[in-house]
Amino acid sequence: MTACKRCPKGEAAELPGSIACQVVPPGFFQNASDGTAVKCKEGYACEGASVPPRACVPGTYASRKGSI
Image (cartoon, rainbow, N blue to C red):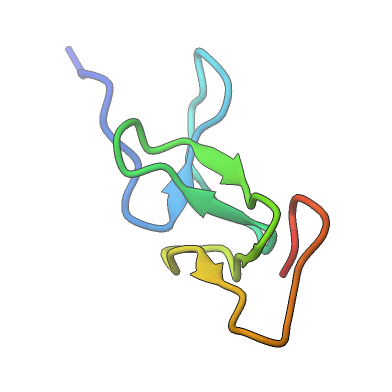
């Protein structure tokens, strides 16, 4: 019998019953608590994979969710 396994760092399985993990795409980041892909929020840029969200530095902005 095989148990469900957590996706590796930088990958996520979004749907119940998933059979494989996919690389977290640009504009998203991996939620540390449950391993799902979360769309980047305003004021941050997300490169995807295992890179954490990066806050916009002074003098820059990201006005939309999913910024890269």
